[in-house]
Amino acid sequence: GDSVTQMEGPVTLSEEAFLTINCTYTATGYPSLFWYVQYPGEGLQLLLKATKADDKGSNKGFEATYRKETTSFHLEKGSVQVSDSAVYFCALSGKQAGTALIFGKGTTLSVSS
Amino acid sequence: DADVTQTPRNRITKTGKRIMLECSQTKGHDRMYWYRQDPGLGLRLIYYSFDVKDINKGEISDGYSVSRQAQAKFSLSLESAIPNQTALYFCATSDITGNYGYTFGSGTRLTVV
Image (cartoon, rainbow over all chains, first blue to last red; front, top):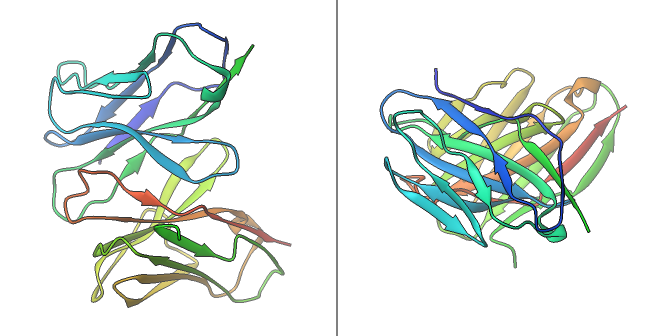
């Protein structure tokens, strides 16, 4: 079945460092791909999305490009801030009817000043 | 008011008790979902509903039941709670495509002692 694999954390960075969180997927056809963020004590918020190959999703300085050839959707940010400390989830939504969002296990990011 | 409201926010219950977690949404969406979050395991799908008359089991439905009382309301029940059901539970809703992402509630932290 469909699945998402993302790098394990925690990821610990200094402020203004470059961030990459790897995400790869297995799916039938061409799913839609998402990154969600969960700040401490809160629910999940949609960070960005891409619905077809080569699409680039972007929001709040974060970017991810839908790569069909490598089945990947890596999250990047050029300069992280302390306020970016959170748990990040990669997720996919299959194109098949009757499917729900499938999540990776999450990656905890901790940014220090 | 939040788009997705979950009650209660926190609950401690005893083994063997029946408990209901409630969720309501104001997005006007037909689709609703219940997920469970455990450290290191990400979010796992318990049940989902694509409309009032449609209920589907997710990855980990054993020990849980749901009721879709109306388009806006979707409740999750634990008929006889056990300690390994201690987790953070999230309700979510989406439009029919799911391509715009899901809107999540703030979660219910359930502890079974």
